[in-house]
Amino acid sequence: MANRVLPYKKPTAGVIRAGEWLLTIGDEEIPLPDHLPHWDYQTNLPLRRIIRIDLERALAESMLAPGTEVALAAVWTSTGSKLRGTVSRVIVPANGEVELRADLVGADLGGVLMLDTVLVLARRRHGTDRPVAPRRAGSVLWSDRAQIRLQGDAPQFPIAIVDFEQTNYPGDAAWHLEIGTDLDVATMGSLLLLVNEKKTLIAEALQRAGSPRLQDKMALSMLYADVARTMVDHSLRISEFDDDATYIDETLGATLQELFGRLFPGRSITDIRLAAQESPNLFASQLQAAVKIFEGVA
Image (cartoon, rainbow, N blue to C red; front, side, top):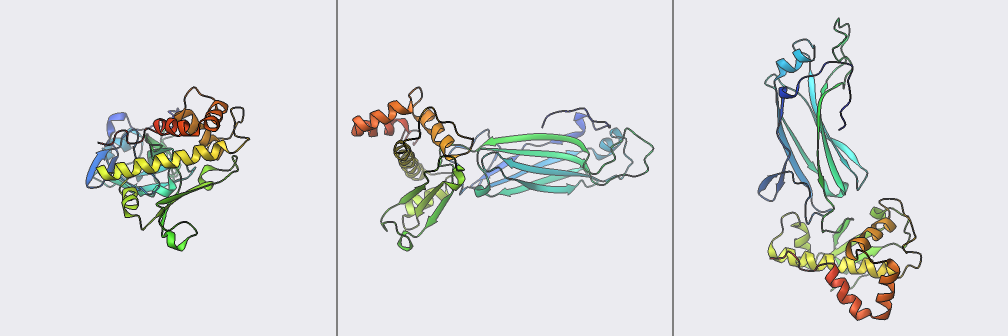
């Protein structure tokens, strides 16, 4: 969160000792990383952090009377889904120690996840004779921000595990990607990856995507490679999808352009379309190389 000059006193930096956010993956708890490889929308994020506050000093340095209630609050914001929510809001106890916990639902997330933590005045104060003391409820006394990028190798759109026998898709297919043709529509509403629950190898790999085993990594690598191939093939069949088109962020068109830029850096969409038409077999191998199938599987 950006620093700004406040019209009231607030505690000095040493008054608050903020532990880092910790992320639970499987049975392991790790410091929140910069990015999370293999994340997908099936993966929830269990988070916690401990913050210790010298409450007496915090109140004194803010020119607040002893016993004034202050609260710690944490809010999450996702750039991919455009959603935000409250992690928790806790009145700081006398001992000054607060544990913040959250279990963020993967379906609500995407892109960059930002976690803003603030220490605020819990209630409005009236009749103070100290004009430099905060008065309004919610006045921020301290804040910090942590963030993690969730745009990893996994498909960044909704995934549903279903019984293909109850759908129009072949019962022996492992997955099917539904993809729209309107490039100006939001990506989240244009793509859906359906996974056949009867194909337990891939269904279980997706459920373990946050902490995959070797066989899970292999299954996920095949899935991601095929999804990328399907998206590329689909894009090349849309005539208006070209280098001159511009799309708003988070739309299907922007997502596909980003995919092409990542898979084929330095090559134009026109060049890629011609290559796919003139030598489809060779292009299929080029695409396989571009998605780096099985890279990092060991």
